[in-house]
Image 1 (cartoon, rainbow, N blue to C red):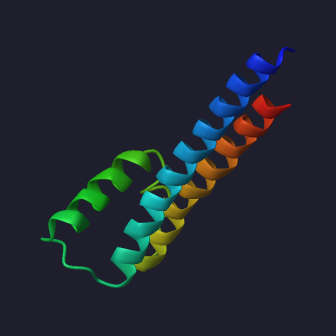
Image 2 (image 1 turned 180 degrees about the horizontal axis):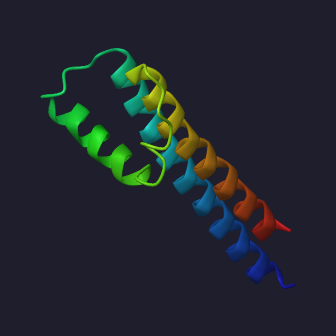
Image 3 (image 1 turned 45 degrees about the vertical axis):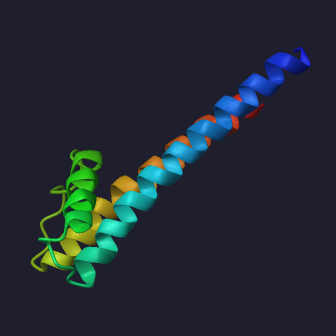
Length: 96
């Protein structure tokens, strides 16, 4: 593999890892805002809630714990972990 192709592949891997990190951080911030009972009428909190809900749409209501906080942590946390794991696994494969 030429150095030019290798550099492009490494840049793509870096971008994929960064995107996965940003997605997981967004979800993590929403979990933190939820647990700290942030003001839901605040624009930043609303933005984080909507973005996290969109990113974790497949997992946010996956668990049916009685406590709301446990449901949020498990559902959104699972999505964040999956994004981190898959994003960094793909990035690692590209670097090889």
